[in-house]
Amino acid sequence: MKLPNYDDVLRAAHHLAHHAHKTPVLQSRTLNESLGAQVFFKCENFQRIGAFKFRGGYNALASLSHAQRQKGVVAFSSGNHAQAVALAAQLFNVPATIVMPKTAPAAKKAATLGYGATVIEYDRLTEDRELIAQRLVEEKGMTLIPPFAHPDVIAGQGTAVKELIEEVGQLDVLFVPLGGGGLLSGSLLAAQALSPACRVYGVEPEGGNDAQQSLTAGQIVRIDYPESIADGALTPALAPMTFALIQQYVSGVLTVNDTHLVSALRFFAERMKMVVEPTGCLGAAAVMQQLIPLAGLRVGVVISGGNVDLAQYGQLLSAG
Ligand SMILES: *Cc1c(COP(=O)(O)O)cnc(C)c1O
Image (tube, rainbow, N blue to C red; front, side):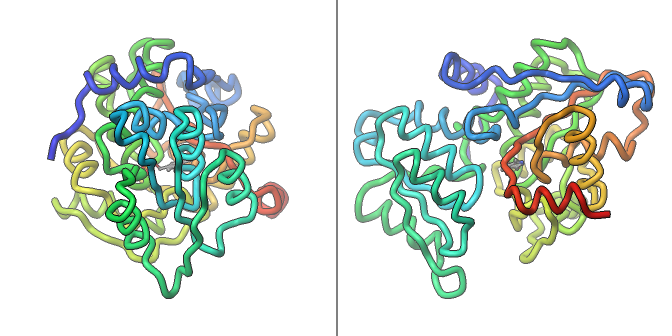
């Protein structure tokens, strides 16, 4: 297993220049005053497709050979990775097939089709999406683009924190949403290279704290049915590649519950005038709950995405 390193992040940044947005870094005076800290939000909710996943998807497509591009790519996802691969493939003029559950929200399916991808639907109860994707790889020679367990995907995700540190300077501590660990792994490579004294924490939902358990156990722990409104972080387990990088560099993994996520989501809507999806609130919720003492520190937070189902978003804003 070849682990990506910071040189791979630099190469990814080169690929992404002029294709990904350099997303804004925002602060809230209210939050800074209440914490006595300086908090820098890296707003990947404003990235193309509404989440950082465009970075990894685009870098993976950019790294393919000509022959691989001609045969096309396949991904299985009902979330942001599907749209990231679909858009990146469209930009490279590469055919893309996305394997999605029949029950995926219509808006997500429409967005994926809108980027020109072919969607193959499967029945969650009776079919295995990995087998469907594997068949396309074997029969049509397509290349599978996994959502996090891939060096080019991890390197692409690392470019967000590279931009953040290059813009604001050294950080004392950084909080990163954590699902399968692609974003955290890339962020660790960037922070290690550019702000080596920075402590980096992954933040996952309390009802899906497999990474926290994995670090304690010293081996990958699987949670088959994680539960949280943070639907982008419900991966049952880390991959060997992300576990290796996280184990090596992370300062710790923290958890927040759905109530904390909703408070952060409302704070962003009310005070900062921006839509952040529940998963995108993981790092911010850890900061707002002060799970680590932050007074006097320079704090980075990755806001990972802003794709919401409007009906659910409305309910989260108005309930309680
Ligand atoms: C995929 C995703 C995550 C988790 O990223 P991993 O690389 O799987 O850890 C977090 N937030 C959003 C918005 C996502 O789409």
